[in-house]
Image 1 (tube, helix red, strand yellow):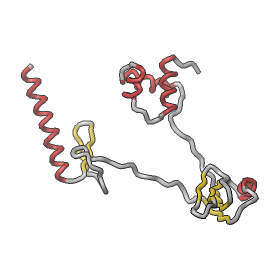
Image 2 (tube, rainbow, N blue to C red):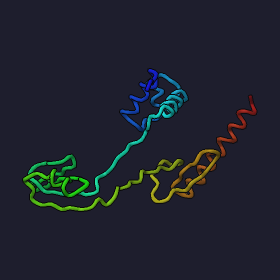
Image 3 (cartoon, rainbow, N blue to C red):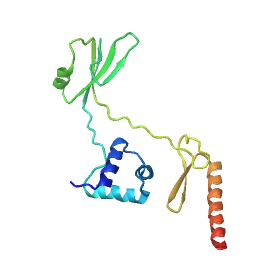
Image 4 (cartoon, helix red, strand yellow):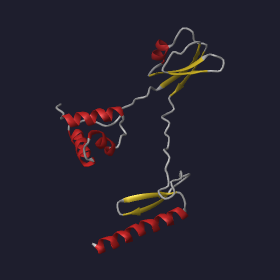
Length: 171
């Protein structure tokens, strides 16, 4: 696959931080945001995937040992280590077990833990606890934390629209 110099540079930045905004890439490379968006679209058309494929093993062994024996390892206050060993079968887990195992617990993978990212109010900037109140204006969706912020946001947006109309009328 052939990549242009700019496509290659954008791809390298995305490898470092896959969540980097197009505007920040544009700033680093001295390009416009629109150009960066087009480059990303071109990369997608060339078959480059911007996703992570992650397969978690079905069985999990939680073992206590004298030393760390896996990437997922935690030291206890007694000085022992709790390590998590993953595998598709009991045989695979047994092959990866060290000889100095003190305790072992075997379990099926209970699924992936999904965490919800925080939302912040578009009016006051505070963290939204619970369900946000939504306000749609044109193509934009605004999130607010309470009715007071929702009303304030509506007034603020309407004021900006009215001010824009007055500015255009004076031109």
